[in-house]
Length: 627
Image (cartoon, rainbow, N blue to C red):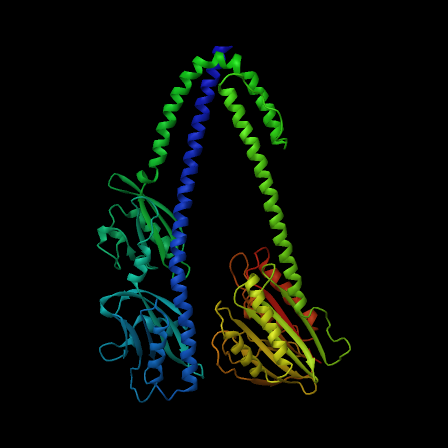
């Protein structure tokens, strides 16, 4: 029996150790790939944070330039000051230019492009365009002009022969005619300084690749510094990298293998959503799997030793250890059922059975401690969930939720719904009647969750307070903006649309604060259109800014359909937006319905579009029908 047991245990040990090695190798490969892609994602996140800050700042600046031109188109010198103020306030941006269309200002001639850039420790402001620099033919000007959309421009040689990447935004005059391109520069050496800090794998070379397959930044000393290259073709034996470059251009992530001489290499790459660029790292398989090879050598040695020892000790094991092991197996089964106090077999000798007893005893104590910690964590989680549920109920209690809200009135019908993406959210709506006028508002706080819900509560309360003493919606929004901008250290803002409906005449005064334009749905089928609104700024951004009031007269049977961008930007699993066109097409068939029926139809349409995709943003609808 001892010989048979020795052979069986020897074979079993070999099988177990082989399986352990293979499992360890597979797991290590998975961990390495996860680690590399995680590092690339972190690198992308770091880079995209910097680029996104530039994008958001430039979008806001472009809007300010557009508004400044519409309000004062006769003073071109104003734009020199605007560029200088912008660069002073954004240390990550190297330069900014406003490239106006030819003859935009008759006094300036064909070229007028105020340009402010960093020079040493100071700023310089100049007029960029001239015969030697015809910016109207530059990529940073032409691409956004032709596409009508903001664009990231792939790196190029800029001022002082330094490589820069640009973000360009087209702007338009009051008639909708193309006016200029606002362009900001980020120097590549600023990206390089951050990229050099990456340490993804031992001996790895890191790259940043443009959308056309060129290297933007590299830590490989063979390419002599940080420059824009067409260098993929320069890597020896780089044929397999071509497919990786094509994947990068297609916005995919993945891994390619290739040989450099006799050495096997791996290249990992991941895209950046903001610019269409990608980060990549190239490393040797020898370096990647060095620890795996050492582990295999150790495992092989242990296997040979184990087989020899099994042959010698099998008989002793059979007589001395099998019985206690059976008892330990029984005890382990009881432990797995939750009986952590089960008695364990012990040995009077200082041998493996005694050590196994001590190990099981420590395991029992550890499991008891772990279960106590699990209970504590579970209780804490339940408490937090309970508090969030209370916060949700409090928030829902702040907005009107009884419909119809005025059942005795025959001149108005209202229905609204608010669906937060998390337990609490940042959307808001409110309405009330005073002096035969309906005051109404809808808004969307930047961000989600508890911080957004607090801002939502402040905005809603402020609207109620101000509207009770003021009938002009533009003045209400102006006062809200001034109050919320003062000391706004969190940089959160609220897009908002508010109005006052005269229930006797159907006259509506309204004011928009960076919010989606409502739809006006007439009483006839097919009578639906987006209300003309002046964008204005969201409230809480810049204090002291004026808000413009607008007016419209509506007929009985007309519905004002207001919503937040959680409706039109609702995504399905294919990342397709619900969209304004789909909403407009639906509204053309809704004119004869009540606000509740109208809102239900829209929500059913959104759910049919989204299907099983997770809700990404708060969704709020407020429908007011004048009867």
